[in-house]
Image (cartoon, rainbow, N blue to C red; front, top):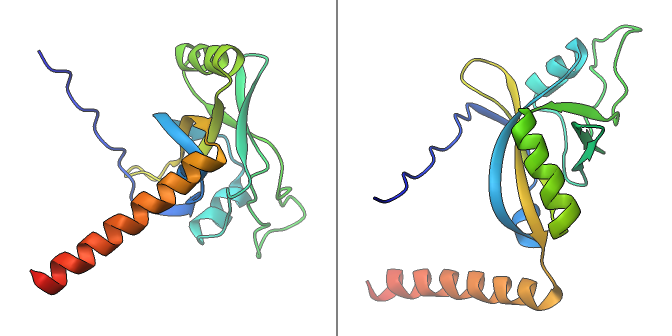
Length: 160
């Protein structure tokens, strides 16, 4: 019997997207993780501010942390405003954390955040990928394939 395809995550409002990640890495598995935020961080994300372009995730002491993600200070925040580039804890099940730890340690894989979004219930979530880095030849092949797909679509439209 065929394995059922996993359902896509319920993304209502995408706040930040790491578009370069799919070019830089071979994405193998994609997981949805909650993220522990303070009040001003949530408000800043709801305004559509935030960046995960240079960020990554790491496993430390049985916990997964999102490192180097930028959530700018909330403009109307008070003295309890948050630090923009602080490490943020990701909320995952122990089995998923163990799987990440094993893949990073043994297989040399990387945990890359693909996007931060709010789901249908209004909770902030991170789409986290277990990925393997591409070398220069793989990146060139990706560019070549993307260009060919674009040219093929253009030719089909013209001669349709």
